[in-house]
Length: 403
Image (cartoon, rainbow, N blue to C red; front, side):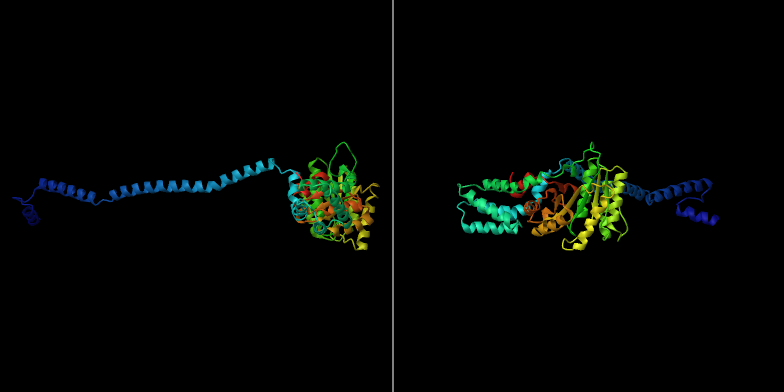
């Protein structure tokens, strides 16, 4: 031990071996040196730096989150704006006159627009009148109406130079004269519910396949229900399951009752049950759907007559209205259909549909004149608002582009 003490004394330059106090002093020095070195190489600095970096990273992350949330909220804000715009759009509903104008644009452009351009040119020749005749035939006006209109136009053109607008008004008055007296016979109970009238109104809807019977019934039920009427619908097209399902969807939307049976059931039986339910529940309207029938199939037409007769066993005055749904696209074929249905069922009115998809919407004139049966409703689109009461003046103004 003394030997080691002497060596340490020599290394430290001491005159003699260290005593207890020297050891304590050296220990203090060693501790001081150790702590100094430890602090120098300590991770505290790095830790501080790390905390600083973490803080900055935290701030950056917070900013990123905020920016992300802003981006995610933008679609919600846009959706809210769009919703508000839609609400405002609903409040500013398109008028029926504008819907009709848009719906009849194809007929107006392809037929009456061309006719107006020729007539407005002045100094009409025989060739120009022949051109007008061809255009009118493409619109599926009946030959009798076309011949009479041409004669009237020739006479009118000789009375002096006329503008296109004057010809349009002249044509309107001519067409109106062919329909006006018949249109005045439409029963307003068909589309205007009067709660003071406690009588059930039974409406039978007929037509060929694809004319739009089921959709039309759904729209009518919706309109009448919205007026406060109690409506019962009979799904008598038992030959086509899809028709019953489609009608049921419409009835559920409108919140009206529907009477249906299994596929293949007797349609007359469904009609009987529907009218009975309507009578028992004091309904205001009873609308009867029927299976599509080709007007050329006499046996099927006889079945429709049977369905109509069965309803009178429940209510002797039923049905009060028998309406034929006519597809405007079929043009003059619609007239032949209407003639056959009228012979079998004694029609009381027509519903003119799909006028927005055809240039033959003018064929309504010939059908009404020939059958002497008025048009009750006209349809120009798919939504409930795209079918409404047939107003002759509005129809002719939209057809001819008269403001």
